[in-house]
Image 1: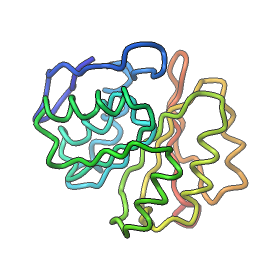
Image 2: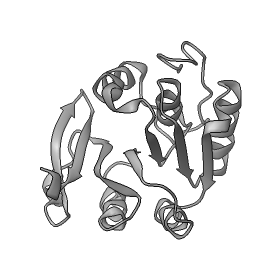
Image 3: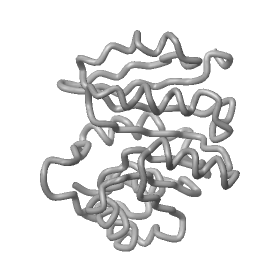
Length: 188
């Protein structure tokens, strides 16, 4: 796994040993960032269920002003911190070792600035994406124009989002997974 483009281009990234995380392949990451590129310059990026931190690091490398990584696995947090140091992007980043919903609450209580892009890669088919979206529904961490991207199994049914104030504005499918792009319904 490596950084695809930007200031840290081609630098290899460490991954978390074992099966506790699923690194996004370089090909899928490149497709995702081709979609996100117009929004990245100067944006604030929130990487939830961050794993090795590859997605947030790619965003920083491509011009995001700041990124916050939330991950509860201690080995993954060490991996994120090592990858940030190696890519020299540590000064633009904050890493929180906590449960995602608790991390969001912590950022809210600190009155963190809102994020332009929120990426989440929760464990597939566990309901974590719904738990997190419920927390984000009225969160001051979202701007009116904020984009939420969820990586999920190809079998996931986004109809479960209908109760929430978010609409799926794009559904990019790959062989075994998909990226769902959501915005608040009031913006659509």
